[in-house]
Structures are given as structure tokens and as C-alpha cells.
Length: 300
Image 1 (cartoon, rainbow, N blue to C red):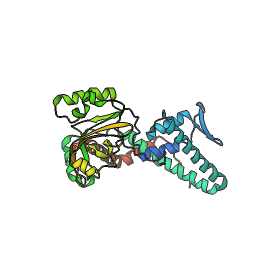
Image 2: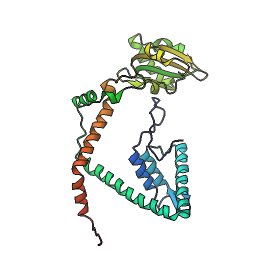
Image 3: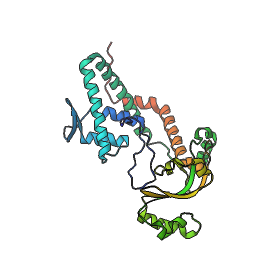
Image 4: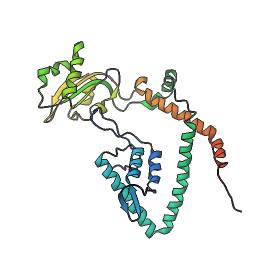
């Protein structure tokens, strides 16, 4: 099981009935690990190891920073179990190897200073950060970094519908409508999906990874290349569901996807680069300003 206190990298499903776990940055994850050291005495304790306690407030704060859902009982149980393991490791080394524990404590304090600097820069510099990225800048970045965006999976424009097998889809001619041969087909499918679909996806203006689209479709027994490259229109059933798939368009693997597919990612990269430039430009000014607010003594 991947550590819940390290970088998360979950891909959202197209099923809007599910709650999604978002990707969290590794810096935030490490920051939350440091937060585990402190507990609130005015809150319910949900776990403890010797004298170390985990409260509801602390757990909620840490899980939220990690992009975990505190309302999901399975995720919360896994988080608590891992917190207990980490506290046991710390307690054991503190008792059995005190010199090593002293080194860990010193390194933790040094690391917390780096984290404090990181977050202070984020808070201060984001006030003056220009987050507006215009399309020409996105296009320019895309043209200069195409090699970084080579696809490792097909991206497609497609329709996907998943309905329970006990529902007679032929009464509503779903097997015809999903082909999208007539203008009214999509309207009827949308109405049908709201009533009966376990999962439904269609957006003919947006590209999506084929692997993400088919995450809960049993396509493993088929030749994926044939399905995509032939723009397959098919439907099939297993013992629980009937699946409808209509591949409308695709982009090949090992090629750069269209710029519109990458716009959000490129925009984030550009803003991140701007923030880094601000940090490099203003780091010394920030440090000097903060130093003036604190008493600093260096002994001979």
C-alpha cells in the first residue's frame, strides 16, 4: 500500500458518483508529517502511542493537506494505522538509540526551518504573482517543449455508457442512440443516462486518456489498438453491466497531444515558473525584512 503521508498521485474517474482523491504536493505531505508532532489538548483523541496523541482536528488538517477525504472511513482508518506505525518507530528509536534520536530531532528542526521559509515565500510572493496566462504564451511554451508532452496512451473523444444488466436498454433504443447518427440521439442518451446509468461520459470538445475513460470497463480481453484506431462503436455485457463505447476521434501514442489538451498543465507550469523567479529575485529582501522583527544573538 502506498504511503498516505507521501506524494499522492490518483487519477480522477469519470464517474461523478465517486469522491475523488486529488494529487497533493510532496512539500505539503512533508509539512503535514511535521505537524503530527503537535496535538491539540482541546479536541477528541482518536489514537495514541505512549504520550503522543492524534486528535480529530490534527487528523483532519493533515488529511486535508494530503488531499485525503476525512469523511471516508476506509481512508481514515489507513491514515490512523500509518500514524501509529510512525509513532512506534519514533518511540522505539528514542528509547533504544537516544543519540540517533537526537540527530533525528536536530534534522527535523532544520527541515522545519526550510518548510517555514517555503510557506512564507508562498504566502508573501503570491500576493504579487501574476496568474493570468494568455493563449499566445501557452502556444509558445507548447511549441518549445513538445518533446516533454509525448503521449504514452491514446487520447480520445468518445462516448461511454454503463448500465446495469437488469435494465432493458433496447426499450429505449440505446443500442441505436449511442451511435450518434442523428441530432436527437445525444439528447435522448443524456436523459436516459440521468435515470439509469451507473456511469456516463461524453464531451466531444475535450480529449481524455483512453485508459482513464475505460478505467471501469473490462476491455482487457480486447485489442486496444484496434478499438481506438478503428474508431470502434461497440457494446457488450458481463454479469453485472452493459457497456457502450463509441470512439469518435483519437490521437496516436508517441506523439504530442493538441495544445488544448495541455492548456491547464502548461498554464500551471508557467505560473509555477513565475513564482520561482519571484522567489529567486526576492529571497534576500524577504530574509532581511523578517530578521529585523526578531532578536538575533550570536555568541563569541
